Image (cartoon, rainbow, N blue to C red; front, top):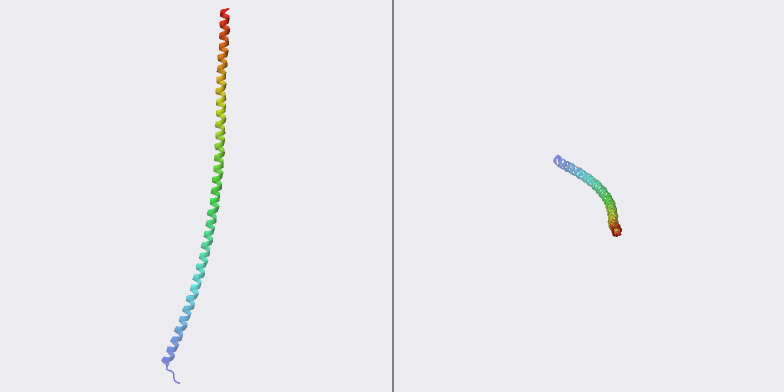
Length: 124
């Protein structure tokens, strides 16, 4: 059997082309697997970072809420103290007015008595 050189060369070329194509396909598949692994790693890291950010936001919001509650409670306490001080001052003012009124009445009474006594003495 006689096979021509061209036939052998063609078969060899075909075999080489097939081998190159197989290597290229294998390389492409390996690259795609690395791309997929890298994408999965990036997605996992992104998810981890997002969860961390969300936890930080939640912790910050809790601190803000606690601080707001503390400020509100302190404001309420101060307002109650101010109101009590106002009420106490008003009671003292009212008592002082009453004492002044009573004192004035007493003075009028004393003056009236002295006037009566002086008038009686004058009449005698």
